[in-house]
Each structure stands twice: as structure tokens, then as C-alpha cells.
Length: 356
Image (cartoon, rainbow, N blue to C red; front, top):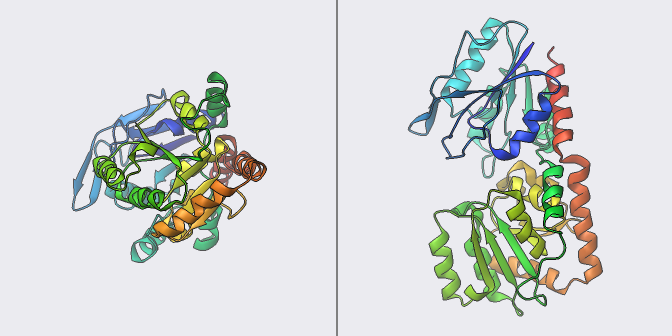
């Protein structure tokens, strides 16, 4: 049996997952070297590189994807569950007709997508023999028989190695007396960074912010920080891709903050024992946000409210060192229990074995 997995790209954080999965299956990956979101694939030995993506009116087509001859009876084909990639959905139907087992792997819901499009995505997913969603809450909400939860996570060993390499816990903050926040992600409208800059200007005592990432709103965010007189409290790092570099800045931070639609970055922060500040409307987050537990591994605020966000930051400013350490430990325990690559592989194997 060959396990075929078809994806838009193979991002770096997925490599440990695929390598571990290959210990249990004869694995064949298919992906483009760059996907439609400009995510670049990592070089992996068992991947057949597909062509680029073509787009028309928001619908995508991945060139060179084999729709017929690559798959045989007895194989299992895992297809990325993005209904906007037209030949993925076509392949799903063709394999169903041929009697080849299929797995639909993707979101049940994405940030802000809970209407007609989400309903259509779930209906299409029923064509597959089983579904793998990103979180247990999606499985509960979908209520479709033959659905499994992946609990999207990261490789803790990579992060642990990065911590050890920099002697984690020894970094010198710019101002040790101030609470230091860290944001990691693409600087787009969904990040909510403008709300965070405004919240910083409302604080009765200052805080520092490290921004890791780049994107189209960078210059506008800088201009807003200058206008609100908080630019001297912010360090713009730019995009970082090496875990060792990320670890240096995580070491300087006390709390992770993501004022917009948070996703895998909250799992990343929890691996560094950083409690989180996120907004409270889970409909407008990615599934990974369900790892957040109010007053256990973080504090929430009212979505879109800079005043509420400022109050959440002030809670951490006033928090005792002991209470902050407890929340930090809870953050780490959250991912160690349910959000690791090893746990993901076991959940994935359960889904695959269910159709064999």
C-alpha cells in the first residue's frame, strides 16, 4: 500500500511530521515548490514536484497533478481539503468512482468562514472515506461519521534544541523592568496589529513589543506607531525562518500577543512557555486557537477593541512573578500533552488505518 499525500506546498514546520509518518507507511508526497500563498516548499526526498498554480476568479489549478495513473486499488490518497483548488476536488471524485480510498485533510472552519462556504466545504468532504480536521472541536461541530482530529502541532525537539543552543533564559531584555510582548506572523490586515499599537498608546505604564514578521502593512504599522508615540517601544525584527533566530527573541519575551485571527503561531508560542493574549471570538480564529484556555494559559479581550486589549495587557503588567510563571508552565503543558508531531502522527495513522 502506498500512502499518497497531495498538498499545495511542504512548509518547513511540516517536514518532521512527514518524516515521522514515513516510518509507518510507504509515503509519496506531491506538492509545488511554491504555492498560491507564496509558501516555499522544503526539499524532501519522497516528494514529486508538481507545477505552479494557475488562478482564475479565486479558483486554483495545480499544474502536473496526475489524476489517474499514479494511484492503484489498495492505495490511500490524502487530498488537501481546499475546495478552491479545482483539480483536488476533481481527483477526489475520480478516486471515489474508481474505488480507491481517499482522505480529506483540511479545515472544517477557518477564521471568519462559518456560513455557506463552510457548509459547502463540509459537504464536499463527505465524498472522501474519512476526514481529518485540524482540531477536536471541529470534529465535534461537524458531526460527520468517520472524522478524525489532528490537533495541529509542532516538533518540540526542534524548539528544545534551539533553546539549548542559545542558553535559553539568559537573553538580556532592552528594559528588564517592562513587560515584553512578542507577535509572530505575517503583517496583514488579519493580524490586527493596528489595534495592538493603539492599545499600547492607552497603557498607563509602557510595555515593549517585538514584532517578528513582514508583510504589506509594515510601513503603515510603523507610521501608526510613530503617530501614537510608541515607536520607541517596538522592535521590528522582520521575517525569521530559522528556529535558532526565533528562539533568541522568544527568550526576551514574557507574553505572546496576536490581536487578529491566530493560528499555528499560538502553538509555537506555547512551546516556548509563553502565555497568550488573543481575542475571545473563536469564530474568527483558526482551529489552533482552541488550545487557548482563559486564565490558564492566557488572557482574552474583546475582538476589535483596543481598550479591551490594553486591559488584557495591563493584567499581565500587574501579575505577580509567581502567577506569570504558573501561566507560562500551563502554556507549555498544553502543547506537551496534545499538540506535538508525535501525537499528530498517531492521530493521522488512526485515520489511515480506519480505511485499510
